[in-house]
Amino acid sequence: MRRTTAPPRFIAPNRIFLDTCTFQALCDCGGFIFGEDEFPERNDYAPGACPQVLIRPDAAEILISLRNIFLFDDRAHFDWIVSRQSLAEIDAAGNHSRSVYARDVIDHSSICLSENPPPDTAAATAKIMSGPAFGFISEKDRQLLVDAAACGCDTFLTIEKRLPRSADAVLRKVPLLIATPERLWTLLYPHLQGL
Image (cartoon, rainbow, N blue to C red):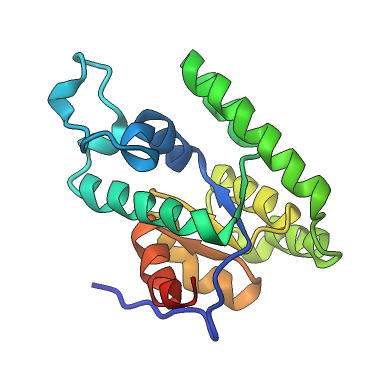
């Protein structure tokens, strides 16, 4: 197992970008993550309608970590960002309820960005991320990372398995933490005492 370390002097994030897969997990399993619903089981869904996250062997860790992160958010008040690029991916999947929910989150994102605009360094960070130094990341993932940087996000939350393997390399070049829900929760947990 590859060891990763926390960013130097980790401070709880202010603005978190939700990648498309993470957003879909929130939308599909929101009753558990945000509410009082019991943990969703694969057999709760009709064939072909089971959320992708529940098919994974680490589904429980992902959803419990997301639930804990959003409970933490009740006091921390993170800015949650979903980009137009993410919306295009969500719309392309053809799931109407996800598309409607994505627009609600984009409205929230727009409010966050207007009340607290990205820092002056955000455009420069996005330009670096779109350049050849990040050619080792797939074009699709890189576009979302560029969107996150342009919005001034300090964390990119993903449930994908491949992208987090590049987290340390990205963090050495730009101030953007790529984290799975499990990793972000591990980093946030020590800050509970301050809340």
